[in-house]
Image (cartoon, rainbow, N blue to C red; front, side):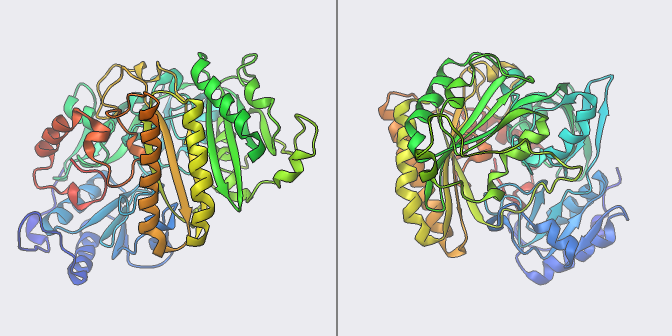
Length: 521
């Protein structure tokens, strides 16, 4: 490719590590990029396109950028990186915009929105799909459904392909086919110097290793080629339980996570305090039109407030798994107490997914994730999470909290052994990584620091509980896609950190990608 002529750059003197914050210089850099890129790209300073480019799923992840860039070609991404690197301008790269870590894909500098990289092209002969970095998984599932195949992607609506895949990627199909990173054939990568290359295991083994879990440390990925897998209708949905069912759901989750040996079966169990109520949500998935006999009986036999489980498409489940955000609080718990055992207060018909689903709708809340890794879900550990929910939920309402949630996501011990090719994350493929994900949502920006501190505190409490139960979790790698923004690299990447830093030094000696947010090597 032809690199952008350096003489045309708005140069900024000073040390290489200096980040320019002068609004005038950043604005001039926006103009420079607008002049340099092709007509396939656009730069916005305001207006609907600008607002869409900076918008994130959580309002706390959105910042008012000086301008936004919608690159339309990989070459234009390269031109932008050269300008940004020379001028030391802070920037951010947004795919789906679902990260809850502030500043990871947003900036007050120049926001790069990958929305024009929207291709989804299926190759039935090679059984792969080419996917642009601005696509969300909902659209990929919808495009592949007529072909009877799918990919290893997000489990709820609105998740971007890029960040999810570059961070690891747990899927409903992980027990069968591994993580999203295990199912990447190649990446189209724009290096920090502006060069565009295709990265495969054979062409660039170090970069292929680094990109599989290493995020945007090595450049900007514009395209993925992903393996596909046969996919018909599935069975699954959500069940919402009242507080009176806590003990039964706890035992059911423990039993399932300990005894399940069917790779087609998966669950997510979440404990949530919201609208003055404690309730539990089980999302069930089975990769067939009907579940194997008995596999989910421990959940189906418990009295429920809401039940929507049936045969449906994978996309329908993804939408349903996100629907509680739109539904508001569940029916009153008092209603279920007067019902005969097993009778459901409200059983929803299967949600029909229209041609155009309003996926990726902004949560309109502030929020944060954190995570910890355990070796198993015991009754005592789940009870500790319930106690945390009961403790923090009512207390944080006064600080604008809307929900406090703890999610348990069992994975079979063999899930990470589906692909033996080393990757940045996870740092080991021998032992299962069983995450607990904490998520807090609130409305006031004045509560940000407090919420960040309390989610750290609650995670630490659960970690100490796991240790007291004899679980060897002190060095267990944390799932980077849900890790808090200040999590040490070694806690996620373990012994891989040294190799990743060497790769980083080779491809980005001038630290161009350090001008963007995220975990940095």
